[in-house]
Image (cartoon, rainbow, N blue to C red):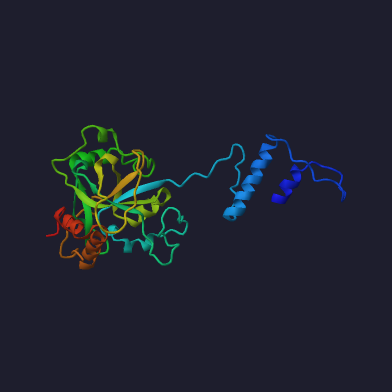
Length: 286
């Protein structure tokens, strides 16, 4: 290409052995052509580089896939449980450990966070699994439960960007019965929400206004992802359905393997301080 550009700049003269070399163009002429030649010279000095493709007028880059965020407060904190959630279409640009790198197991991008007392819920061993044991769940305080149920017919599946009813912006805070809940906020493709709904059978998805989250980047453990969240970004919490919100009994005990998986997730993200905080803020264990 360099040779072609230079030949295009030459003044056409009759070719003969005795012909003198063509004169150089006067200064300030052919600026565009000289700039291109200068760029070619830079590429020669610094090595070959891939030429960026020029966009046609009116064209635009494809939009980035939108994300949703899930506040995980139980076994999902343990990234060894994420392998079953790997999606073949997941892009390597959204998560460096998404399964394309065979040296690292698949895991969802996450950041340690606290669901604040102001949201109005408590964590306890109150989810009765259909497989015969009791897992972790949360109980919504009365005001929060009323706020979430008021939009249950359209939330969360039909309007994923909505963060609750108008009650969220007024008097829905229920600090008198809620407590801080530590966990991990995970990022997933918005299109994966139906998959998570199926996996979280027996739970319903409740929107969480961003103002009820506090991040803990100082926690020492697994490297955290720095999220740049906007108020419109959908954040959700999975809450047991009333039919599954039952305490443990002799037929639905706590499984030591499940408890260990949760505590290992705490240790993974925040070492002993996170595990101790989990134990302090979880009830219903008998």
